[in-house]
Image 1 (cartoon, helix red, strand yellow):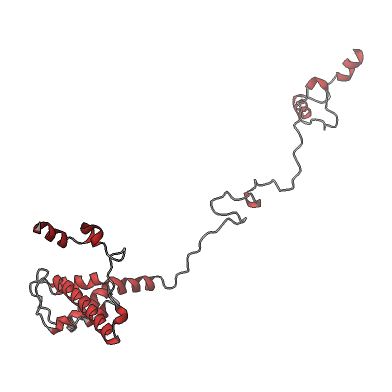
Image 2: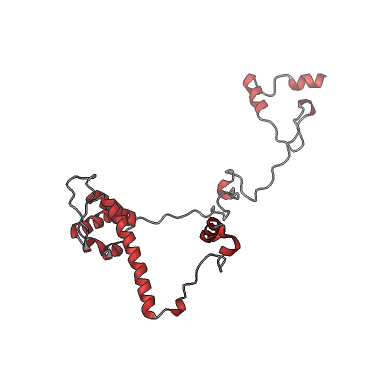
Length: 227
């Protein structure tokens, strides 16, 4: 009986059932901030900031792999917080591993203070190599270049991706836009039907006949009158 009562008393949260259900659905507890004085609010804010500073310090010192001297110089993370306004945290940690951790270089001196000029210079130089120098190279290399123009359409106004409308430059040469239609083809003439009406006399036959003798041939009229 006693053991069961102790078990029921120690139950809390969801395991306690309805008896352990909190007053709020999100399981938060009222802190009573309205009862705090301004000084108490400031003290609570300072405590939260101190906890955040200790967390940041411990994360940075973990990258040093033990090569540091504990003291007020490392408890004051003010310089680091100022650095983080410009440099990402992962770049600062990488600099600590390179310049403090003796696994990277056995002669690295121990870190004593975040205000050490050599340490801050190493962070600044790494930042310049990673960000400032590439940005300047791109900016200087692009100086004087005309901005690239983006094609928006063809000369006739049709959009890119659609076939351009036909224009005078794309028409076949010798075929103006208002040229009359070609006449329909005529049937081939039969040589036995005589010359076509309106057709010009063929001069080719005359030249061929003259090439073989005088024209008209001798006796042509006489033979015709006798017939």
